[in-house]
Length: 113
Image (cartoon, rainbow, N blue to C red; front, top):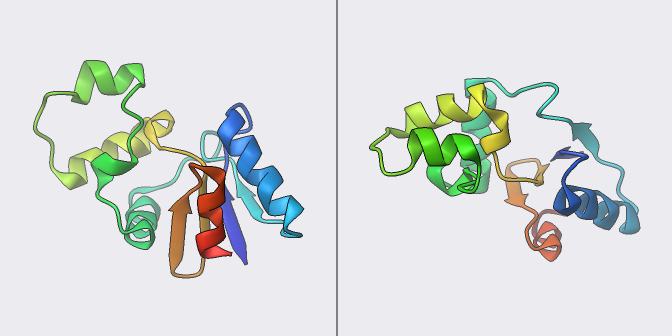
């Protein structure tokens, strides 16, 4: 079963969902801003993405610019920051079993379906 971390207000996230639907896939939708991930969930997703926490952070967000940029944080601290401020998490994330991708560009989703 395919799961998508989705922000309906984000055009890229909406495009990712539409891409899946065009492929005949109806994913489990997790609106991660409404139902935030916990530390362990986010850590598992990072493992499936094969990414470091900093690679998953949206660096254009105000919180990143004010509180994180230019400072030295451990991976654990960055994961906690994303849990506390889920807007920091890049989107959309599409998960299928042990694999996951950030669906930017949308065609990257093909790697996990």
